Amino acid sequence: MKKTMNRVSALALALILLLALLPGSVLAAAAPGAIDVVVAAASEGQSTVAWTAAGGAAAYIIQRRVKDSDTWTTLNSNVTVCTYADATAKGGTVYQYRVRGRNGTSYGPFKASSVVRAIAPALPGAIATVTAAAAAGKTTVSWSASSGATAYIVQRRVKDSDTWKTLNSNVTLRTFVDTTGVAGTVYQYRVRGRNGASYGPFKASSVVRAQAAAATPGAIAAVTASCEGKKVTVTWSASSNAKTYTIQRRLKDADAWTTLSTGLTDRSYTDSSVVTDRVYQYRVCGVNGSVSGAYKVSSVIKVEASGPAGDIFGVKAAASKRNVTVTWGISQYATSYTLQRQRGSGDWVTISSTLRGTSYVDESLSDGTYRYRVRGVSPEGSGNYAYSPSVLVGSGSGSSSEDWDPDISFNTLDSDGQRWTDVDFKDGKLTMIYYWSYKYSRCVSELEELEDLYSYYRRKGLRIWLISERENEEGNEEAMVRKDVSFPCLRYVYAFDDYLDTGSIPTTIFVNSDGEVVGKIYRGNKDFDAWADIIDSLM
Image (cartoon, rainbow, N blue to C red; front, side):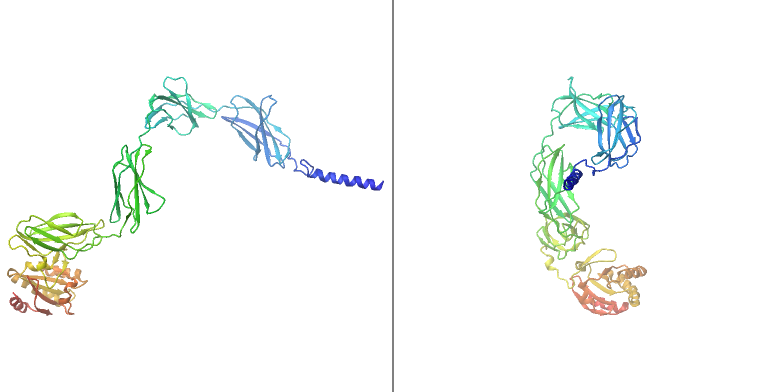
């Protein structure tokens, strides 16, 4: 008997353990408590349901029924807050709501609200105007606002048809683009506002004839890129049917293209955003409305280092009958050259400002003596003019720059910015070159002696040039103004080193009209009579 009782107890224990493992067992989650109050309140377009919390509830189930109906409809089975907005209720209908807590698969009891009559959303106001404008491949419909509307419904019909087709029932802007019309067909559009389930009246447009899609732009035959300084100019041939053009750029061999500009009406574009020493490629396509043609790609182009045009050396002029051939050295960074001509002591006349090479033949000249000057031109600044020697055209012509071989070959500026070269030796019978500095009182006081010399010997062909000591130009200019001298002060250049770099200031030399240094190198100061004796002996 005792053994039988033990077996019964074991079976009972096993059964209890099995039940504990089954769903809904006594070990499942605890059921939520009861909800005390459920309140439903109607407002325009929605009913709001609120309730008190149920102890132990992880979520809530909310249901709705029409008053006195036996059928409850679940609106949401996982509400995690104690409120719910029902925007699906039909205006004028009387509803009742009920709510219960949920904790996993355990549920609390339902608690119902009082009945509430749903209020329909406000009707949107009337639309004043609707316009429809056809363009290639599309018709754009626009309309004025409807008060209270949260969205719009757009419909279309073929002219005089009774059937309207809804194109879109949830347009949130006041414009709509219809790309589904058949070209040549006459359509009419109408629009009305919508606010939830409430609708305003339709407003119709005038009729409009749909247009065919824009023709595809034709192929571009050629795209050319050229570089000047830090700018690349891209030009291209015309694309048939194209109204505008789009241009793009990439680094050589890169996969990604960057759009530089759209809507271009000219067939050229200047790219100023390039970087020195990089290699670029460009492509262009024609555009006709919303339709683009095929891209045409340029050859690659490298943006070279650039800067203001450098100085030119070695300008030569050689006459042959009535022509003069002018040649010159390269100006660093120059993209072109400006060449000017002077006849005798006349004005300088520009022959060309866009020369690409370093030579030019000036043809069919009249008899006379000519000089030429040339400078490099760069987008970042032009260089200084460099001057040729004089050349004779006509009787006795054949002389050239090769005939001129002065002892001092130079090119410099004076304190007024005027250009001086060794060719200017020809303009006087004898040129006195006086190397000085305002820092030495003996130099400043001697300026008066030099002014007297110049006044006395000028008619006999004497010219006096002051040469300013290095880095003292500004102080020398002020001293010259105080002394009111009437001859120029030139900036020092290294071409004078062989004659003026003596370690003594002042130092003086004389040069004749053939460019030859005559006499000797004179160090120190002299009075008027001493200088007059030297000048008389040299002239």
